[in-house]
Length: 62
Image (cartoon, rainbow, N blue to C red; front, side, top):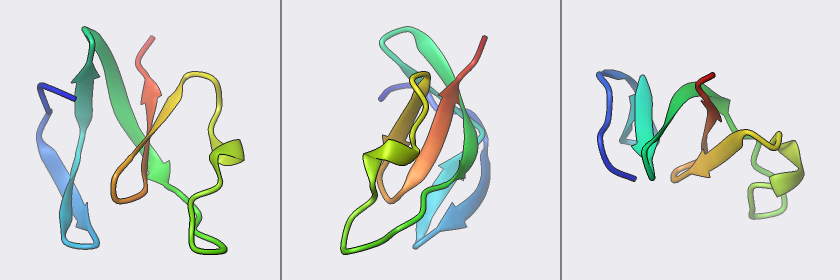
């Protein structure tokens, strides 16, 4: 993860960035992941989404 957009909030003491860049692709914050059974189930992600610590889901910006 490289360049980050403006911080728009925080979750578990970590900033939530408006957007992030990963390998020249831009992703925008979408939602906080559901936590269960001591993990974040990856089946809650769509094909165009990333899970970023501490449980933030970003979707690919079209």
